[in-house]
Image 1 (tube, rainbow, N blue to C red):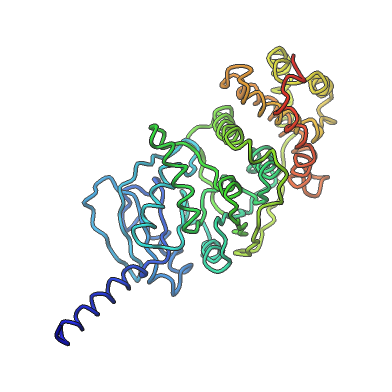
Image 2 (cartoon, rainbow, N blue to C red):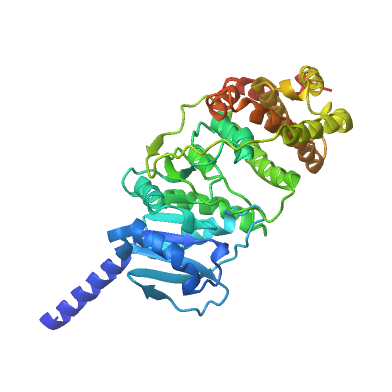
Length: 414
């Protein structure tokens, strides 16, 4: 072999090697950015430039397109590549199975070690928050990094009432938002999420919700909670509370059933990294009029009158007695004890598993009870230092109740 030929082959091998490691980070934009123009992406691209800094050269930004022939392009040091996406915009504006599958495929094709999904209105994230999510995976070796958004005391109440305390109590993951709009994943976490996504997309359900914190817990992966400051939260396509509450709880309750063998065993909490991407912002508590609170309480009372018979199929007598007492309280002293709310949620989880009644009717019957919790939360918020933390501890303390009833459901037979 001639010296010239050998040199050419070495250069080719070097090029292949460089190409294989040239992309370290993949940032995948969700379906909200489908067929986006350069102009419409400018606010987000500016944030990403500031967030990435020197990492921009080794980062690939992927955005969804309907035409697979769309060309890649570069702008001011950022590389953008189109990808054909099966994901559609979910009613709740959250990431779906199809998005996780696309992220993993792009990461695999480029041998990337860190992947990121960004949701709608991602330009409102600060560069420090995005950098914090990437650093959590790149520098801190976390497998899943989720943001801790700064929100008002009366915002994100479904998360505060059910999603966060339930996933924390059962799966030992203490991150603030288990169903966050944005997140970063390690290679193995992206593969794990893609495997879960394939099970859904293979059955024609690309819009199924996935729970990265729960998958991380089941796989023994580490999780990072990254303080991310204020973010614009896009509004769901529907304003119907029952639809939103039903979709989120149905997904979470199904996940709890699927992984029952995991959470019934006593385990240490999931390894957590706390990353200060942005200082937490304490937003002021908005004023809620007594009329608004009274409307919430009245909705609960109407539900108590109309749904008492249905609730009696799900809830044990002691809980029904607590609801009877609650329905008779005057508005100014209306307060739902944390212990009562925890039992309600746990019994609805169990009824969902046992199919005690039609699941759609079951989750619809949860709405008035949730409104009672909201009314109580609003009235207690000014006197309780950290209501979400207090409630989460109540869920953790009463976990043996769910375990016991899950294993021996006939102990309560209405």
